[in-house]
Length: 480
Image 1 (cartoon, rainbow, N blue to C red):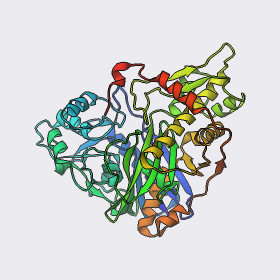
Image 2: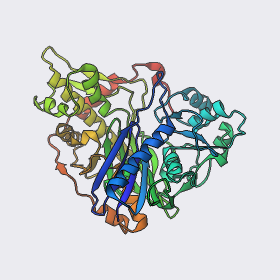
Image 3: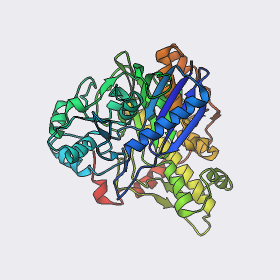
Image 4: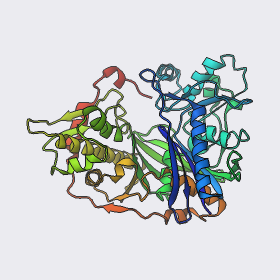
């Protein structure tokens, strides 16, 4: 029983088939790079985005043949607003990285309403204020999962699963209802929002596709990656090192004591919901991971490709004392310092390009160790290994540095991007391809396991992070 997965990322959309043996085939992708017309603005053409996703899905079905179900996984918190009658977007979609509502968030914070600009709530209000200030139009608002589900079902279903809805900033602390105070303050009509559904279970037929297979799985990208790496039992954790970095741990069925950020800088998340019951987790966030390798390639020009970073870094045994703090966009967990900036320390006349490249890879690995420590502090869970996926997971110098920094065995996913696999698992669980969460956990078979070597100097690392912090004081003072 094969599953078609539609994967809506930030810079591309993909479709692929997930098979009962947990393999992924027939992958087709298309670039969907967002626009940044000015600093802090990140938006995209939602109609073109949906068209690209549907085209990828149709190509996959044409090559593979019928499937038993469809799974959807997407970037989280990005917002699309469209006309219910025509199905056409009424404004550019605002990406999760968009910061145009920072001022709104600060005003709301002074009123006792804590929202971040990377949540959906203020993005929704911003678009509605522009296109429907009187709130008289019959509009639909939703995150990217909602938009793709709407297009796949040709407007029959306006839905979002709880793993996506939980980052809107519009649900109450139990995630069982709307936060009416926030809704009223932002003047967001409840009728415009999607119906919140389970992450695994039948939603409706994808009539836009040949054979109209049922949509049976929806989840945010990081939650899909968690499931795809077999972290379906409490205490298991994975880290994804792509453009940014996210570490997610499965905490089980008990809701966290607070819906806010923990003392060590992690956030509670909904991993998935089944039969109306949420599974909870915690997430640590690295604002830039692979971005730093792109900087080496595109801006400094000291490596020809991202893949070459491994060979260049391996050409020297160590960094010769150089240390790099990957804070090109500030620091996330545990510091949450938006004014921190990338910092390269310990340079001498003998520092070479290879030393710098190795320092960058080791710096991202140290940030990974920061996330492991933060998740342990906020949840009380001590990990005995770490599963990883994402583009940087194929870099052997990086994965060894991560094992050394965390002092944990690092298990590398057999699928570089585990999001598609996870969405396939969620849909397959609903139609009987897999029978239980235990069976999904048993699918995990790492491509390789990296054992930790000598521990790194974490105290020295913390000193370097301190030097990178508060470079732009005004930005460092902002907290959400």
